[in-house]
Length: 629
Image 1 (cartoon, helix red, strand yellow):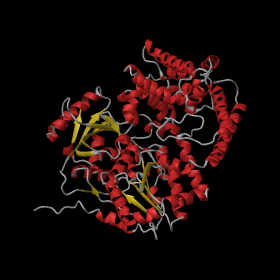
Image 2: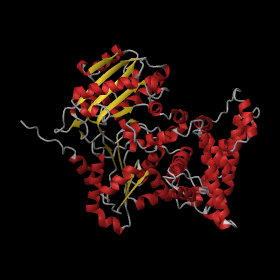
Image 3: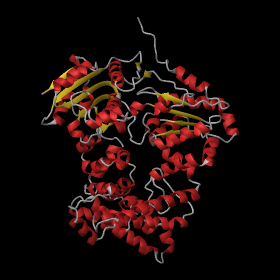
Image 4: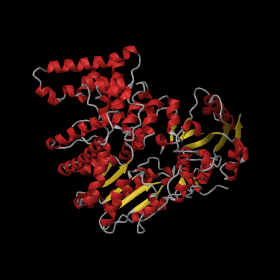
């Protein structure tokens, strides 16, 4: 007997949203959309409905519908699926916010002036209490100088510039975090900004809302509350897929009572066995459950438990892949032509295995740099990935045209202003050429460190140095000697950000292309972060607390192999997030990428207890578990 198809059971969700998109009585909503639920398709269908029913009215009022997505790739996908219709403004959160604030030059100046004055005052206070000349004193002096210089030129800026995908190192530019801070501040404090938003965009839809900056999300909530008669906010997300630390915790708990809260039930991606597993994982979290499509295969999920310490993890995982090939009768698990996506919960493990851990770990371990290290948005990092790396690639390919293009676009030596003011332009061009040659002479003695490159560029002025790296780049020889002589002294006022960069910059340049490959997810090995929203036929998830380091994730605690610490208990009692909460979410994200088969490889100090707990939790049956000696 053929089962009745369930592929359309979520149509009612779209119908409920569409029915309440009444411009005379707008209804805001939070749409729960778990892994593989087809949320992009729902979003597109809602947009098509708006186009059909409200196109004329929107055009008459010179209004658009705004859609905020998390990545440029998601923007491009949505734009293409709505045929690039100008009725819809699709952008990332940074682009959207910049377009909202960019004409408020005077207000931006005032905000920036106050911010810089406060920062300088704080630094000067610490300088006045310093015990003597050491690294912190020198670094603070450089920061005071840099911030004071920026403060002094504010009055000369006629308009600020910002590129969401650029480096933003010019004197009149804002950085990524400043744009977000300004957007939230203006929406919270300026009624005019709220009026501009709701007048221009009567409906604002936010995809991946769980990872959207919490301060901006709260600002949008405020706007909706104060303009609910003419403005609807639609947020789409799944708190179990929250990855970035600047996302809002417990977002679903703050949804106003008068909002719609539709839920998508169907998982279109995963086979039945894997949906059963991820539903069990969610039982430990928010309890939300999904259904498989009626036409989906059963699929395969296996758990391989490995005793640690062990010798060769790569060989173990290779043998596990062979076993999966035998179990599934799928040749794509086997050999050199295999197509397996290997995922880890912890970024340090990915960095270590891919070979860029010396660069990545110092930044990732610093809370204020963590999100930027994960998504590649740190201005200091973009200096190397977006400027030095393309220039290096052009150099080794002997692409003189590309070298000239990069230098012309980015070097202050031959900027438009410099060329206009120069008596002889040829002298500037020759100076830029010499700077490029001098830079690549560094490779004559092997691969240079990032610090070598930074100092070389700072000396030649080939490119502008990001503010974050200025204190490091501009250290004199005398200051370097003082830093070396005082490094053993105790220092209560260390600048954790500069210290992190000091360590990261000791990495060799060959870690930059590996980091870039990781960011754009070109490798067969990745993390939850790079694959959210994506899917793969064969997935291997690696659980390894020893390789992970740090206390952000801990699967042995989650699964009862290790006990909770006093800090864990305190956080649980206070309702704060724990490493177990984070581990559970990321386990859900990684396991839910699989379209056909899934292998979980768990490295544990107590295989028997681990397996017993997994069976008791009904995640796996005994016959689905294999022990690897």
